[in-house]
Length: 268
Length: 269
Image (cartoon, rainbow over the protein chains, first blue to last red):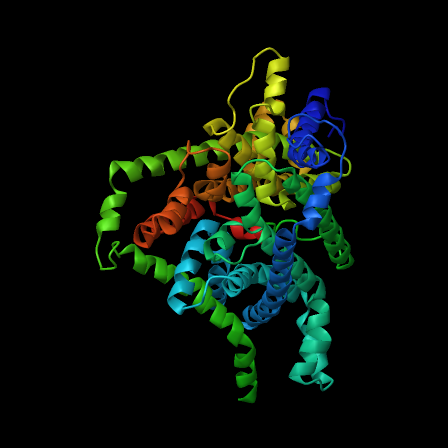
């Protein structure tokens, strides 16, 4: 096969990449515009960043978002790993498939339905909308992705490894902590980072289950954007872009260590 | 016996999660879909759904989702195909994926600037002599931004399918005298159809239910099933009607997954 691309193909690819990155760099570019709009670039300024860091309300929202993301990623990773171990243990193919289907429901469901049904759930259960309802929903929609990241690692594990450990007299607990967990660590990290990005990225579900007093960044950006353009959002997105890149790099360094570079497939 | 209790102990959180956050929400939506606005049992919502207003909305929602999926596919397939021919293809693929990691809201917000009255798109249009147009808050901007958002998710499964394609098939077709178009139509496309199906599924279902994009980018030009659900739940406060629309969306979702999902488990494993 010819590895060389025709000029036309080359142009097509370049245009695709340019289009994909255009909005992101557009935002970043205008975050330095003293003109105050996204149309005419007047002169370079850091004013919007200054304004951003003086906005305590926004900083609290950022903090909320990070706390929710870290907590929900941590808890969903724990529950997800336990769930993956449970599914791995099941011998009957039919039960296994049924459980996996249940597991995947929240991944394929549209966000609007997850949000609306959780809103009903929390209202009926008497959970006040706010921090806890947002945290619970983020945990809930992150668990299945953790399971999907951990399960392949478990099935890769050779059963003789477990037999050997048991033969050598390891207790059930020892087998799990000394053999299983270290073996599936790359999967656990991948799951944790996926959960983290899911939580940071979520808008629709949070929009439904958040009360009046509590917002996350996505919801806040939504309400700000509905009022029109403000370059502090641009400054904010520049920072978010850099942080996202950082997380992506860390994620890749970690998963690369766990052989190959797997699981780009399980993106969304 | 002790083994059994310890096993049960660690499965508890996961089982609780399935019961409370997977099964219960579906049942609750189903239950609420049979309640009218006063909270008593009735079929009103279902009757309402089959009135012209809602049927038209469903139809237009499907039309837009179809359009978005088709355009996304038309751009994603050649991109994925060309990507597989590049030298550092995994790296380039990663670069395609990176924009999908940026918060959706920020990307939508960027288009407010690009498509705005004095924005870049209009400057370009003026420069090439077409003149300024109202782009923002039209169905065009809605479709464009949706395609932009879904394209990485479409490229990914198609790229994976193309990448797994055995090149000897192409050589064989070539030796047997097939033209490039015939090779594509008879060999490449059928062998990568699973990737295409997975991509369409990942695009079509969310496209039916987008609601923030319609608000931010499309003004009120476009109403999708998602917009309608959000409207019923958070604005009108008619949870019953909202749930009924949600039930139909879930049904559509299963039909689409059934239609496109023959070997999907492998593709997403």
